[in-house]
Image 1: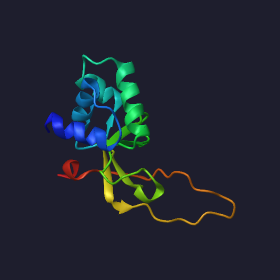
Image 2: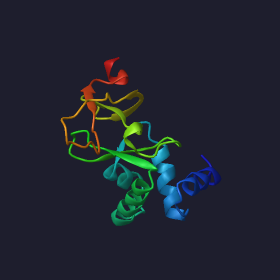
Image 3: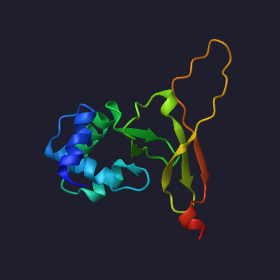
Image 4: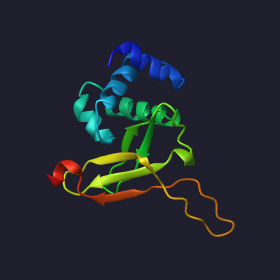
Length: 138
């Protein structure tokens, strides 16, 4: 993906494009499955952990990425669709492969609407299915 397109994505989310932010988003966009901070650290050895962490937090605040707690012990992230605002209506199922450890967004599968008892207010949902992914089943 070229730099101009990455800058356009950052502008759309009202994030000032800097050299580091462009590099980090480019690395994120290369992932077919969710990624962790340590995944990015190993790929981007020249960028220090605190800079990566601040960039992830900024991207998360501006709904460019969403976080996933897949039970693996480290928070994973995935780049959001252009129309995503990380509202309850944008939530979707995630799938964690017990064999390879990858976590995938299942954007076409919405989280079911589960009625809560009176006086409870839903603020977030974490729906992770676990099993074996299509690549590992082969």
